[in-house]
Length: 381
Image 1 (cartoon, rainbow, N blue to C red):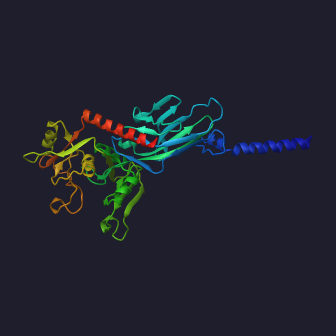
Image 2 (cartoon, helix red, strand yellow):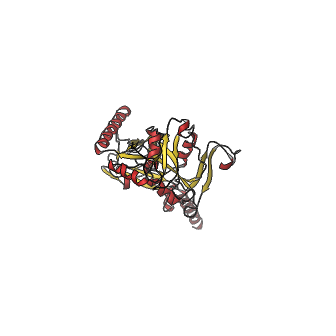
Image 3 (cartoon, rainbow, N blue to C red):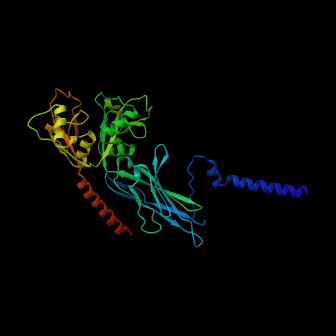
């Protein structure tokens, strides 16, 4: 009797050990962590998610399709509905709900509400259409497909066409903590840039000797032309990295990112130069506003605005955009020239104004975007 009891006891313990080591149990015990089960081809009820490799690119105000397909083999005549969930992945790793579909139910979340929908060409299509892209939409997205037993995920990166611009306020350089820098970029029609965006700008020749905050809380700066005053002449070119800094206590400049303009920047022709208050009134007479720094950079980079005349901007700085360098216009390199923050009352300059798109122009552009998406769908069915 004792021998059979011992055999049963050992078998029971071995079974308990197997249960404890099972990955499903491990996932359930990790409270607060996302459960991801990668399904193998020989399992019943498999869900296999495929997303497009690489990056999809658009611009602010545009529309884009985030590709995602799934293969689902079910058993039985009446399978449970598949749940499709899209989330945005932030750094440090956290997830923001974007869109959920379960059967015929659909729901968008937060700032994505009324801007997102499923493409649904066929039963395996979980691709997400996003309209009226904003700067904050930049980043990585997760497509998760779940049936009653299993789930699987894929990721897609959404990139934006745009331009990096370094920024510091009137009070001077190295005066902003992380939160100040974040707010400053938003005030100038931008967001704090990512490392990938700054690195791409460096590859395209950006050279800036002052360290600035990035979106992830790190402080870095791009050097294309090494020199003693910028981290020593003998150091190699590249994006120099100060690492992650204290967001409240430490102060630097900012690297901002902006994208396509929902309007137009123009230099206002006048008979005489103006003080800052006069420049403000001149733009407002036309129903427009003083251009922001990010808007001027976007006009220079994306609309090829080239003007060899200094003008006031909304933050009280004076700048001008040069696409085709000439000696009398500030040197041999293209860029946005910065004359700093002169006296608003006593210094006289021209002015750069911003004209927002009318509702009719916005609707016309939306129709063009819809036509483009429909053509894309027709070519990829």
